[in-house]
Image 1: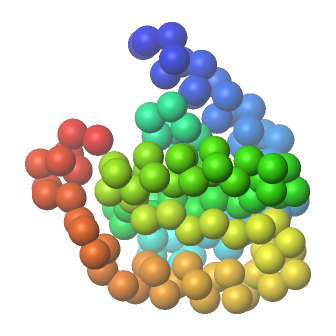
Image 2: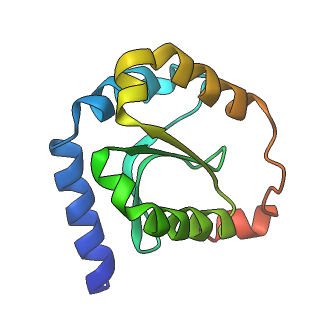
Length: 129
């Protein structure tokens, strides 16, 4: 395994074990195909990034942003653009949205999961990811 992939895998593992309260709350509602029968992974490496939550089969990434993200909006935009170029739709929520109104967050996720991807990758491209 190449060094970057190994480092990302190890970092993703650490993040899964040290999740925030907002990540824990959302994960408890996404795990085990509870939402639209979609299988989500948490802290999933994609390229040089680690997505908070990822549904590979529906090409959806969900990112939770805490207070530190207000200062890194430009980096978050670059990250979202990278993921979108690879065929993912990206949803971003603030931690306080999850903590104060998880049902509204889940409704937005369901709306995206229920809507076919506007630019699905060809089958061959998906198989190579």
